[in-house]
Length: 173
Image 1 (cartoon, one colour):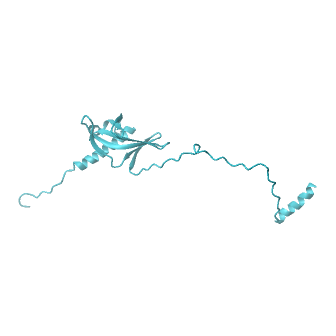
Image 2 (image 1 turned 90 degrees about the horizontal axis):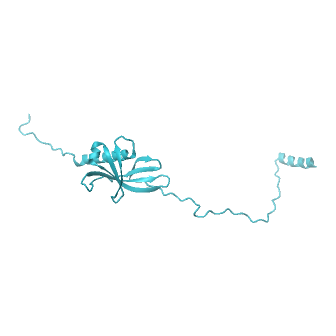
Image 3 (image 1 turned 90 degrees about the vertical axis):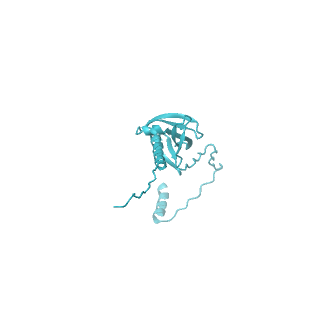
C-alpha cells in the first residue's frame, strides 16, 4: 500500500502541481513569550568621547593620554621655580572613564632634557612625580618632551627680537 500511495504523490510533485497539506492542529499550550531583559541586564551605552580640542600624546596598556590644545602656560611653583604647564587627561579605553590632570616640567629640566615631571589634579594639588629623559621612551619622557616643545615655542614668540631697519649714517655709496 505504501508504494501505491507514493506514486500519485511523486506524479503530483513531478508535474508541477502544488500539494496542499492540512494545517497542524492547534496545541492546548499557551504560546511562550521571550523574557524581556531587566534594565540591570542591558549593556550600558558608552558615551562617545570627543577628541575635539585634545591631542593624543601616547598610550600605555588600556590608558590613552591627551593634552588639551591651547592649555600651555608658564607658571611658578611655591619655590619660585619657572614651570611649563599643560592640562591633560587620561582615558581608560575599556570603560571610557576620564581623569583630568595637569603636568609641569621646570624650565631648567627642559633645558637639561632630563629631570622630573610633576602630575597635579586640576586644582593644582601635586599628585606624584616621574623621572624623564628625552628620548627615554616612557610616557613621562613623551609628556615632558611635548610640554618642553610647547614651552620652547612659546618662549620664541615672547622673546622674538623686533627687527629694526636702520638707515646708514652718512652718504650712501
